[in-house]
Image (tube, rainbow, N blue to C red; front, side, top):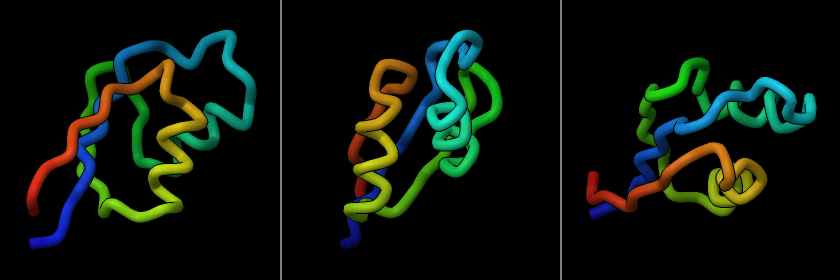
Length: 62
């Protein structure tokens, strides 16, 4: 089975840098509490690492 990442936004982007806002948007997150499921790739891991203080991540089997 392929691994996936369940990403949930937990904090606001207010007062964050523009590149971090753009990273959250590229992950598909717009609101606090919103959850998306993305494929576990190096690119997505990098996105998550850039905004780790704003999101919670879970590995799931998809």
